[in-house]
Length: 165
Image (tube, rainbow, N blue to C red; front, top):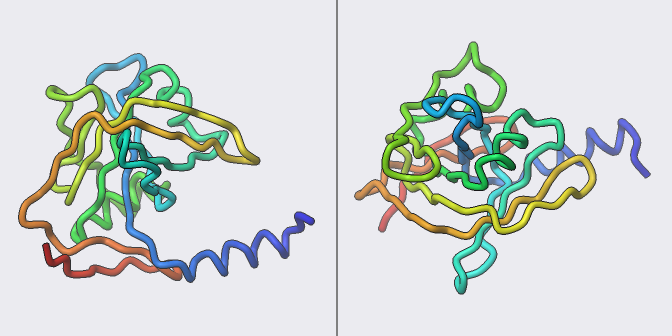
């Protein structure tokens, strides 16, 4: 049963799950040189054949209508020095900084300095509860080589983890 107490407990316990940090980005549906983006930790691979991944977005997110219009998005895996970018697109604009976006070569903007970026075409979009699950087919993959330390998040804190390829 959904109660305020259960909702808080669920959030608190889920914060114990250590996760990577990404920024999902789509082109603005009316202004082609603008980006609409959100921070997400709910990203996972789905399939290797075809290459599919998924993320979740709140039903009332301002990103959702732009995603529907564009039919494409990027998942940008953040490096440890990009915690300010995560804060900005996670709703803490005053504590963060906008990213530097590359828009010319791909159908979705990609974040400069990210450890990796996946450009995807929306394959499926479905509402579940107060979120939509978005499944995307990967059409392009970019990487920073060698990778920077990864940005991770747990218990309300950002941390960096060294990546060894």
